[in-house]
Length: 214
Image (cartoon, rainbow, N blue to C red; front, side, top):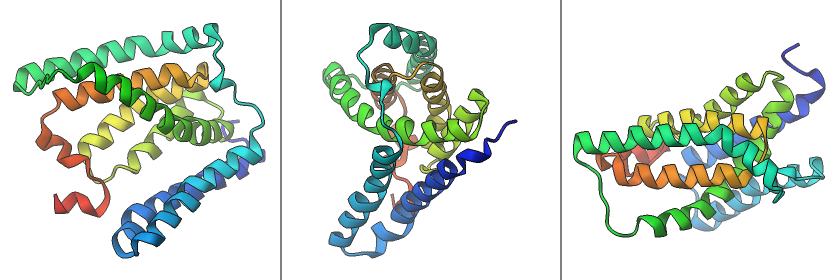
C-alpha cells in the first residue's frame, strides 16, 4: 500500500508548514510591519517544524558522525554532483558567463554551513515526514522535491534547480540519511551555479511577488 494511514499526522504537519512558508512569502513579508514579519518567520515558519521535530523525533541518526553512514550517502550523491557540475560548467563556457573572482573556495566553505542548516529543515522535517506517508522512496523523494520547488515559484530557473537537485538530496536521505554529505553537495553546486549561470536567468534569486519587481 502506497499511503500509510497511520501517518496522516505527518502529512498534516507538512501541509501546515508549506502553508506557513507560502503565506510568509506571498502575504506577510509584503504587507506586515517588520516586527510582525520577524515574529511570524521565527515563531511560526521556523518554530513550527522545530517543535514538530522536538516532539516527534527522539533520535537524529542523520547527525551522526558515523563514517560508514557518510560514505553510503556520499556514494549516492557523488555521481549526481559530478554530472551537475559538468553540465553547469559546460553551460558557462557556452554562454561565456563563468565568473571566477578568487573567492570560489571561500564561498564553498561558507555555503556548506548554510546548506547544512537548510537541509535540516528540508530533510529532517519535510522529507522525513513525506517518507512516512509515501512508502516508495523514489515517489517520496519526488514529492519532497516538488514541494521544495513550489516554494521557489514563480522563478523558473530556481524551481528547476531545486526540483532536480532536491530529488537526489531527498532520495539520498531516504536511502542513507546523513546531512553532512548532502550539505557538501548542496553547498558545492550552489556556488558552481552562482559562478556559471547567467545572472539574468537567476532573476536576483527572487521568489514570490517580488519576482516581478526585479
